[in-house]
Length: 349
Image (cartoon, rainbow, N blue to C red):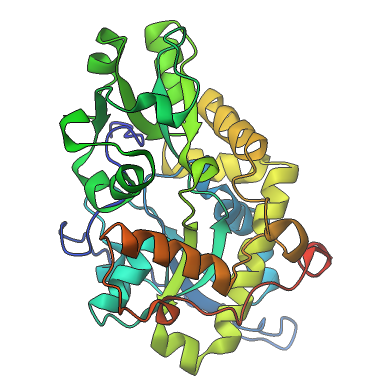
């Protein structure tokens, strides 16, 4: 199987744009029969978690929680169902092929507008890793300096971050160039910029182009959605809050464990995605830590996964003003704070 990275397909897509690839949930093997000498162990609750792409460091905490037995400590037998270009998380959730899915804030609010009953219960990434890259030594020092320059973006950007850039920095449609998930056109045009993912494109550009690109993390320039969220169906939140809490707690602990020593999680990642390299895993982890992708803002005091209503409100207001969301959408239906914000000591004990 070829290895696809973020530059092959941006994770963002409309709710109905792609056809979901619904895979059957795994069925655990039957437990060993109980005997007088060997009492039956307490049954683990089976859970399937779907990711939004092929296994990589950006999923590391979830894989770590499986590999290190953290989910089992919380009474859960978790199967990670790896994503890919044909996977639609909303369809998987609503079709009950998965119990939890790796989502993002913009899609969660769009689901509210479509009356789709899913809800975000934790936000692993405080910062969306979306970036724009530019050539060095071209006088580009800020995002504003890119105004009027050709920028290679995907079609999905038109309903996510591009309206934000247009509203805040005055970017215009005549700047847009079609991004085919190949850095070739960007490398050939030194006046251009290109979209990317913090933990992927800069490394690829450095290897293929022989230079370190200028990197602008959109999250550090006003674009503030939560990313790599945990979302589930509203019926699970309502009917099985204990399950949700255990899955969230164990996942967060998995992320702390991964940042401390990623060895176990990385081995499992490479089993699911054999094309993943140690170099890419190490680079991705380094960038996530350097830029505070998971641990920054509220997460520094409230723990990984933290969310606030103020942050959701701010993101909604910015994107509604940019025309992405309807102004009267009840964005508060997209999330719940019931399962997070318990403090770093709670998650690390």
